[in-house]
Amino acid sequence: MRAKIEVFLKSGVLDPQGETIKRALHTLGYESIKDVRQGKVFYIEIEDDNPEKTIEEIARKVLANPVIEDFKWEIEK
Amino acid sequence: MRAKIEVFLKSGVLDPQGETIKRALHTLGYESIKDVRQGKVFYIEIEDDNPEKTIEEIARKVLANPVIEDFKWEIEK
Image (cartoon, rainbow over all chains, first blue to last red; front, side):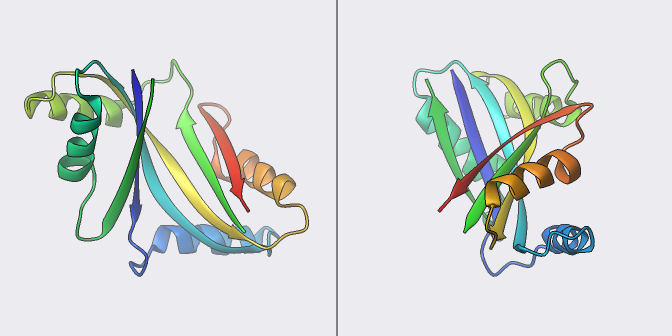
């Protein structure tokens, strides 16, 4: 089955990439964009008896840096 | 309102980052992971009369490279 994990910076953590994209969009005329924050997304193919446990563990221990990042995940059966 | 844009490699395009993560997970004992592909996600705050048009345009013209990437977006009102 397929799982998706999103990893994003905690609110309050500066996101220079997102800031740069916002400024670029303003330069291109997209003034209606008020904020941009960038995150990572992982599409995972998993064959597991307890995919929820494994995906949660991978997200927490491997893919996200808990000091500055949060994550959420879902499983598409 | 908030929008979310996901940008991911087209199927068939090699994803060395995803491959590296998969191998790392196997090394850590997560053998049930069969495939990993990594993408980008953009969380956008927008104030626009036609946010659908603007978000679609930004995704297509600015955030995704149409040669190797696909995208999808949604607006959370």
